[in-house]
Image (cartoon, rainbow, N blue to C red; front, top):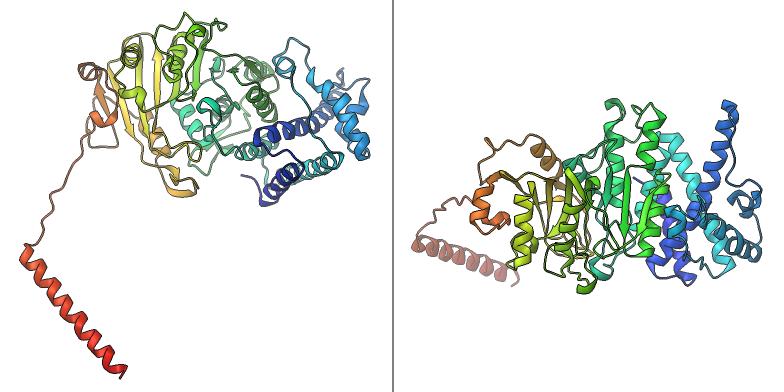
Length: 507
């Protein structure tokens, strides 16, 4: 959690960009991301050089021959000179880091530095320095890891995207991502993908989940959402494990170039040094991966559609609805035995079209549909009020029983304010999931229960929880109407006497 001091400085940075003529939140985040990255790149390179010198190992600086491109050098320049230097030299330099073949360089090809005024750049650079100074103080005072605080900083920046984007795009709240990662349980050595990655939240959630697995219990903590977290990864003692985790574990795709760039910065600032994020519409004919990943995590765009002529022939559903096609794509892209956690709108669970029914049949007959968590309407406010559910499934085999959970609260109010509240089902979802037993969890009046796949097929593959949940009504006994009427008359007499007494007191 960010300190009030850091939050106030981030808010001040927003105010500067707003008053400086960059009012679009996505554009502002993109430009702020570049500044954060420039500042962090300088600090990381200096630390790498210091470590190599201490260990007496050879090392080449990223800035070799270009020391004037460092943040620590250009931050002292006068405003006009700084703007020209950053726009014409520093920004082109960071765009080509890693070489043209790297995802970062590819995503940055058409990126533009558009901070328009020298005064805005000077003020922004000063505030970014102050923010990192606060992060360092927080690290020293409270033992908070640098990457975690820096990650919280970026999450706070992203929270300013307060409206849904085109085609139903919006950020998935971090606590819901953590819940889904706990259910799917990605592990070190597995390849994890998000086919509609946006700002990279699911990939980060998987990264942090794996880090928690490899952090000693004594170094873990329970976060504000009741979930266990560990950011140290102290049990990853082999550098090869770290390379696998940071370079070959996570892959993401998105059809919005701005989202890809923001996602790249997000992963980099959280400590994933070589993020594999690519500009790609994974429903289109250009995407050709199949049987490729061990884990798929996604919150695909809702209520979107794709041009029929551009739909990949590998997708077997006769529809243009993206919420159906993405689940079809995820089934195809997983290896046999691969696991998925996908957020879908409620309509996917009970829609009556042939494509809806065919997708649900695919989940039950070509996969093991392990669980469905019905989430309350409002978890995506202020972006959207749509009702949603989480599908958890494994590719291959068939389904015998499906576990349902009727989630009532995610720890936040379900209005546009989304204030923190005490009621929170997420720890219970995870605990019940880990202890689930189809022989014992048969009470359909309970919060969670199993339903045999045969029953679901008999109901036309209907997966809505209300089709199977039983509500227990307790019979209420009421007094006869004459008794109630007598009480009301007595109350009326009492009120009349009180009014008369009050009138007498007033003379």
